Structure formats: C-alpha cells, structure tokens
Image 1 (cartoon, rainbow, N blue to C red):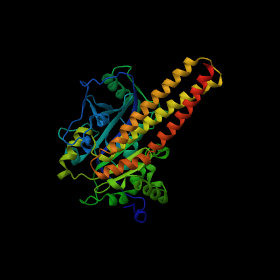
Image 2: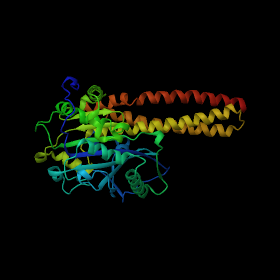
Image 3: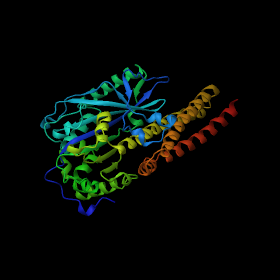
Image 4: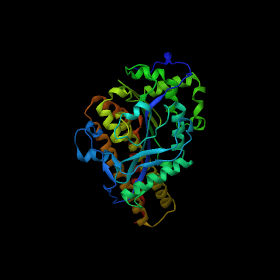
Length: 410
C-alpha cells in the first residue's frame, strides 16, 4: 500500500516524541592480508533470535555476515543537546567481515527514556535523556556523530579505531577512503511516547508523522545538518514527494505490516512500536544483543556493505586502468611492470566476484518470501548487478589491450 499523499497533515505544532530509538552508523575499513580476530576482545553474537536464523545454514556463505560484538564500549562525548538533559553516554561497536580485505563497523547509539528504559535488564549501553527525544534532537545527534570535521566525530572515530586495532592488530586495520564509500545511517524508532493508539499501523504512523520522518530521511543533507530546527519550514509538496518515493523504494512494501520501512539514498528508517508493558521477548533479546531490533536494517546493512566493497574495487580498477594506459601510452618496454598491473587487475576481479557471488547466493537461502523480495529488489535499488557488469566490461577491454601490448614488445 503506497504512502497516502492526500492525507499528509500540515507541519505539526507539536512533534513526534520518541522514548526508544536506535541509530546505526556504518563505517568501512580495510584489513591487511592475514589479519585475524582476537576473540578475547570480541565475540560472535549468538542468541536464540540471531539474525542469521533468517537463512538456511550454509557456513561458507553465511559466516561472512555474522555480526561480532566488541567487548569495549565507545564513549560518546558531550553533544549539543543540553535541553534534553544529555551530557554524553556510551555506544556499542559491532562489526562484520565483508570480504577478506574489508570490514564494516557499526556504531549503535541507543536512546531510551522513561518507561522504555526498563525494557532491557541489565540496562544496555545508551544515551538517557531526561525527556522524550523530538525530531530536532535526533537531527542534532546525527550531526554531532556524523560530521567528520566535528570534535564528537573525531573522538568517536579515534575510540572506534583503537578498539578495532586491538582486535585485528595495530597496523592491520585502516579506514576506507571517504571518496570510495558513503557513510550509511540506519534509524529504528521502536518506542513512540505520543503514539496515536496501541494498535500498530505502519501506514498510519508514516502518514501521521510524515514531516518528522521526511526530515530524518534527509538527515545527511546540508540543510538539516546546518539547521536541525528548521525541518518544519520545508514545502508540503517536497515532503509528500519524498515520502512517496521512500515508501515505494524496492523491497520496502514487503516488510511493512506492523511497522513501516522507508529508504532514501544512504538512509534507512524503520518506525514501529514496542509496547512497554508487553514487549515481545524476541525484541528484548535483540535489543540487548545488538542494540536494535530491525530485520530490514540488518538486510539493508548487507546491501550497503556490498555496495561499499564494489565502490572500492571499482576505484582500484580505475587506478589500475590509469597506470596501464600510462605505461602503454609512454611505449614502455618494461613488460614486468605491465604484467604486475595485470596480476593486480585479476586479483581485484577475483575479490570482487567472490564478494558478489556470496551476496547473491544469500537470496536463495533466505527462509521467508518477504525477505527474498526485499533482497532481490535491493540488488536493483543498489544497482549491484549493473556495477558488476560495468566492471567486467572494463576488465575484458583492458585485459585485451594489455595482452596485445605485451605481444608487441616481447
């Protein structure tokens, strides 16, 4: 069912008030050859409700998507949210080994207030405001954590790198270049303080809180980052168009029954309602183990990670293309240099295909049809197969060119 444009309310005088929220910040790292995990400092998340239960067992294919939990917590420095009574807090750090040379780190910042704070016992790492969060609070927190030039981001990045270096060995892990991957953000709203009723209706929530959710979908835009409090000043037609697009993103409708899933660019949102008095046992266990309870965010994170790997490999191939053309254009007689570049080219191709083949194989192992639909359409949404075809065509042409050149000079 699509988003109801005609029922979009005007900018609200009040605001969406949130008692429970999870923010997921995705960062990508390179791993040195031969890196190993020190499981004394990190452990595999194994719970009765592990997300891997969505898949049929296949150790070779699934192992790369197992989430590890770092034993150390990340300290959140003081952020500009004094009105909400926040001076800092702690966040958990999860990671997944995407490829032999790639790592995705997920910083999970959980916010819970009031009755929702008693959902998990023992209490999970979190920010605990003195009042429910509102839209501008969330936008401000995202800005503080996500602004690469800010002090909070630098402190979090340093802490994250310290923890990962302790697990993989100093010098074995390094942040992937900003130009080669985008920083994805996942948002799960799981406790609404001013919920409209005890009956959870994803479509109704999406329509009622269209202005707030559309602002969160644009949380990485310059306007929202510069003035988080100006989200009400946008044009209604803009809000409606954005929500319509987000609600009709590939795969989203298949996951929207008791909740609503929205995607826009590098942002994915799930809005749901876990009644404090009768929260599902599974949800509580997942919140305790992962810091979030969203299958859609888990699946979306896999696609996001594969996209980051593809972007990095494509960039590497472009660099190799440039170097090979320079060698050939300069009429170099050093066949050894050309052969080394060709060898690197084929090694990159093998890594890229290994990663992609594992990703595509996961679709056939998902147990529920709604997850299969989401995953298959995510492939289209992220243009993963198109990127693979583009890379392959580059490789074929370049390999033929380099081979012909070698025959001429030898």
